[in-house]
Image (cartoon, rainbow, N blue to C red):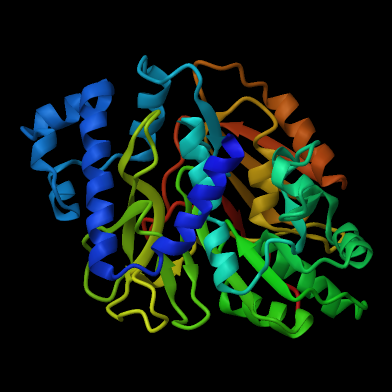
Length: 419
């Protein structure tokens, strides 16, 4: 039964993208109105917010009406979820990477989480990747499953996973051994792999498609991936709390927003400056996500899609200023290495990695007062994951400020790049 529902939802996902812009807007608004009504009736956090604004569920009829509600920050969302008595007991929990240094956990109904997972398949089909493609995934160990999913046992989206902790040598060995159709991974890790292959003049199998997720690639990384693998990087922008938010279109050259499943707002900013991205997840009924400041910056596009899809476009998504960490051996660690490592011990409220010399890494942590945090254990785990003689200093602090430009940054390196 679950398989039939998933297949139906997948078919609709593929069909809906071809609706007109007006049809998709009407669908989005119906789903938004339903979510707002549910939020008011079933969630005390949002009911109190609407009441304070003097707004009733019937007053929110369009996405423009959403601006009558206040933005929800990460800290507000984390505290509200932790204190909520309204979350269904059968909820499933999704964990963010903590890419801003603020790890988060979000509850979802099973059907909603299934829909979020399906949104990642739309861009793959748009780029011509068939369901029977074989995938090699470089990911955090928390994402590696011991058992295949039911559709993988039927031959769809068959996947081999390797830990981000393994490093470039093992990533390359896995690539050579599995010879996948698709190389999938954190964009920063794919960039490191491309540089490793190029620098060491190693032979490497070239998959037909390379897909980057989580941390967005910069122009230099895209070009390195194109040189080494002879195929462009397929960029997917998303988050655990929202699924695939937007994705690069092979025809339009910009990012389509999955507007049938979420609302993307761009907060006001000075002309020419990137704007904060606010998300409303239309599939978030366990604990609604409405006007949530995800911590990313971007720009709306004024162009109409040239591919025939009704999904609107984002002109650019601007990644954060997270840096690559350089070890004494010359090995490089992408920011996603630390996002995976920080999941191992009890969740801090916020963290930041700072490197000022190759042999030393400073980890600032704002611990969650409701959970036990042992600095020595955290340092030992990170040292074990790095597997090199590096000094790890854990600093427990009361707060970690944003950068001077207002960005949230979890990994900072002051070690100069080698030529």
